[in-house]
Structures are given as C-alpha cells and as structure tokens.
Length: 181
Image 1 (cartoon, helix red, strand yellow):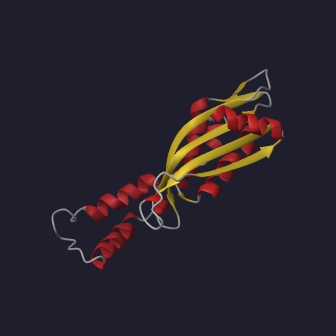
Image 2: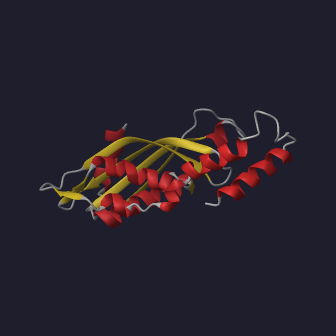
Image 3: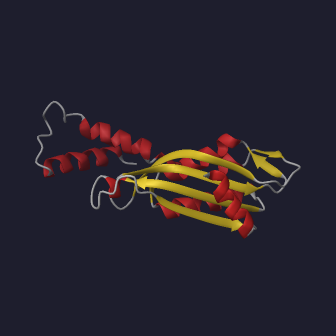
C-alpha cells in the first residue's frame, strides 16, 4: 500500500468536502486515515494457507463447528464497514486444525475490500483446499453500514450468505444451521 498516495487522497477528499485541512482537528487526519486503511486492509498481504498447514491427527470424522467468529470488513462498493459473525463447520478427513487458526483465516479475508458473498466463498474454498476435510460449510451473517447508516437506513437488517464444498449432506447442512442458532 502506498501510504503517501492514501494521505494525499484523503487530503483531497477533505478539501473537496469544503474542509480546511490545516485546522487543528484535521491537520493529521490524512496520516491517521492512511494508517487505519493499512490496518483494515492488511489481509491482502496474507495467505490462509499459512494458518491451515499446522494440523493434528483426529481419529474421528465427526463434525467440527467453530461459530460466532466476529469480524469486520470494508464493503468495496462504498468503502463502509460491514460486520458480523461467521461459522465454519467441517468434517475432518483424519486431521483437524487449531481453533484459533480458523479465526485467523476469517481475518485474512475480512481485512480486504470485500463483498460478503465473495468473502464467504473465499473462506470456504481456503478451508477446503488447505485443510482437505471431507466437507466444509461456512455461514456468514453481517450488518452492512451502507444499508444502515445511509441509503435505505434499515438499522438491524442482516445479510446471510453461505458456501459449501465437498461432501456435506443436506441433512447435515440443516443440522449445522440449527446448531449455530
């Protein structure tokens, strides 16, 4: 990320909004905003693979669910936050991953300019590709500030998206939805 370009762009934005960029409250705003974007978009520099390589033997093929993984991301359409929770359910194929690693995978994809639907798919694909479970299902429920703070202003509305890879029978999918509620 070119922090200087981001700083310059924020200064231009403030000027375009009619603000005095030299007043006390705004003088350092371009630098602060550039650093904020560097943090919020840090997932572009990471790969989910590094988090999913360390596995442990698991003799059972029973379902594993990690739910309520909180995240926040930036919508690529309006550069406004969306936030919510993700559940990752998978059927191990002899291997499981440390639970914190699933949360780290969520962060890899949430810390990018995103669409909720794409993020859900990317997380599911990464878990399936690198952990190699029998099946995986990722469910994402999020609130988008581009719908709650502007536009239609429907506070509390949520969007649900999910993705499935591998062998995840319909009956098990329904059971996963019930278990995460």
